[in-house]
Length: 407
Image (cartoon, rainbow, N blue to C red):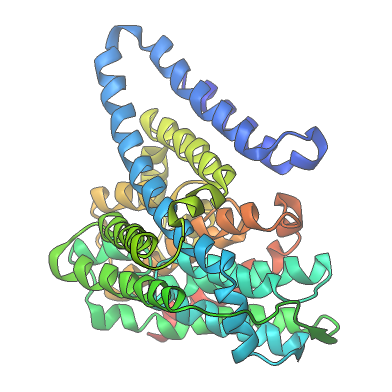
């Protein structure tokens, strides 16, 4: 049974990689294989249906939290895009013409800083909006998206509000906030390394495709509401352990209430219509991927990984765990490692936090930022992203080495 589930997971990975060959959307194939893996579990354990059902419900609960969080975030961004807010801000902040090297540096810096201040998904949606606002070739757009994904994942490990795995290690009492802030040096080291590799490509002057539009008071209010929701998510999560999904749904409800007020007293604005602008392919892709990971967890694959971790020295094991997180969801992977309670020094815990937080960047399916970027940018396929695997590996190794030997 374990072999069969692993085989199904491999088929799902191949369906993503060869999407352009089989001409079937990756959201459809991953959802199919995700559902099939759990159907197989129920059939194989027909005498333990209650146990498997409990595991499925736990998996679906985790998925539902992520789904609702994505719905809330993407609705805000859909409104900002639909009303031209993001393009207007970009047009006012950025010049009409910019060198490709200048944009590369800007994306690297914004990726780290944004993901430190807000969640990785929101940061990805904003950066993708900026990248798409410039006239770029396919190769240039893919290259900037790869840099954006790596920078976002790198910045996310610095604060407990940026990456779930960092929060898990912090909550277990192994690292303090002050120690985690030290990861900003490895984060910038890795991103700077990748940025230099990207700057080796030929540069040129590029023009922006955006146009400034008229901004209304309701647009400004909802923009402020979006920013306030992001800040509130961080504060409430730290102070009261309120799940980010609840805070974002609360912000979304205020957005809808605002629409109801404006419709009654001012002019007609149907804010609920922007829910339809969400790319549900992204949500289906997440659903399929997380169902597959849940099935792998159920058959004990993550336990094997934990046992493997304890066989090697922590410096080597944490590096390898980062590489594995590009194939396995880093949240259950980190949970399994924390359950094993390895005896690590502070630097080794920082190495593990950096590894599982940034290592997933090496494949486009290895992080939420990568999955969102692939779903939003049609040119960014599995193989297009994988072309930069050597660059990403070097950048990841550079950041990891700084974490282990310099902090």
